[in-house]
Length: 222
Image (cartoon, rainbow, N blue to C red; front, side, top):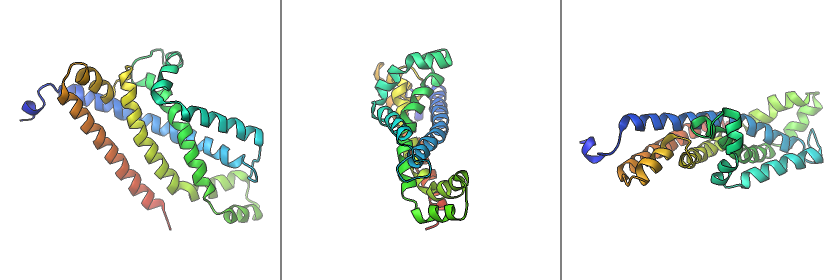
């Protein structure tokens, strides 16, 4: 029955492409969460009136964030082909797509982290400073815990965007479901391959959204 509905689908290749998409998404989400959190903290802490107030550093970080989150991903991945080849030794495959995925998503998530930090009640931070807490203590004990629900919600949105990015990366040889849908589905006019690739991508997105919503609800104490 399944073979009749999807005569052109190679299920072993579909599974391989799904695992490649999951691999690219998982690694890039982890790296994006770490780097984006650092960028968001820097944007927040170096802003006027905050713990590490520094207009120069803030302007440099803000410029980096604004530039890289404004470049369309399909252009960014082409621009970063030489960099990816230098880092991983090739311009093709899942690993070659990771630099562009991370550089494309981390600035976007960094802004979301900054927004989450700005929503924290300033009185909580001031009370911690009055009690003699160091800056690092405030970061680990106040800023990150208080903003974590919004940060998890933000990384959920970013992870879903990254699934879309992996599909675009597949068009330029990164592998995964995007590559399968383009090469075997679109170019060979095999609509069932494109359809099944799309269905699996949608399932991945729904699962990410479900997990993200659950974790956010668990962390939100309001």
